Length: 315
Image 1: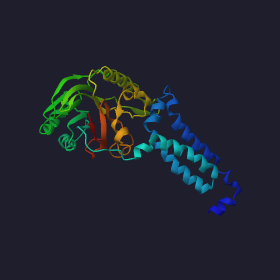
Image 2: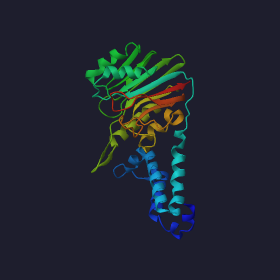
Image 3: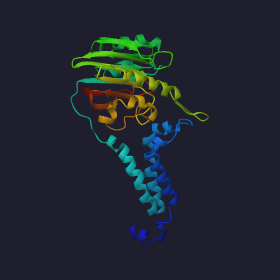
Image 4: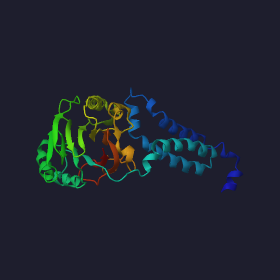
């Protein structure tokens, strides 16, 4: 094969289009923050699925080999290096042992056909503190009964709830500019000290042909949540919830700029959580401030359209 390539003067002329496409993929990853949100929130949409741009790399590689294009192969090195720089660290096992507290969060889906079973499955993770989102009023009692044997303390605010093995106080709703309660805050008195736990469910986003990425309401709620976290008096803070956005999305900067993702720090892989049938994005998050993450992982699928996630932290 090498002999065929050496004797082929066209290897540098063929594949110019492939090389240009490889360069475009690299530029999208390098300059994703410069893609404007003014038109259909295109920048946020790109950042939501940014890791998936890496799928173009093996496709271009196969096409370059088929075309016997040295130009395309050499150009392909650029998006490969960029992707590895952005996401290669997520492929390395970083989870450690130990930890002082296990936390978990799950969007249980308002249409969940088995709320009790879902609650029991998530509680089996061993979480000391558990947050649930999308709790319909008619099913709250089912979740409360299923979790009563594991968690002595709990509180519900609107459609979000928090369950804890340790005493809770100062529980209140957090206004994220929706007109109804989808976020809350509580102080949990753990054996290692008090922590502020925020639970949030950001507004949903959609991709529409005529409107693009409809994320404006979510962005306003993220700004409000970020302000509430910034005003928190306790040093140790945990955020659990469905943010309907990834850590790459610049529109969540009000939150992500002041907190650390457990998955990015100590997770194994991308930790995609939605949709449960074929996870494509990690829109469910566990984030910390003033606490050190030790491990982060995705829990087995329940009857929800989201996967539950968990993490261990140390003080």
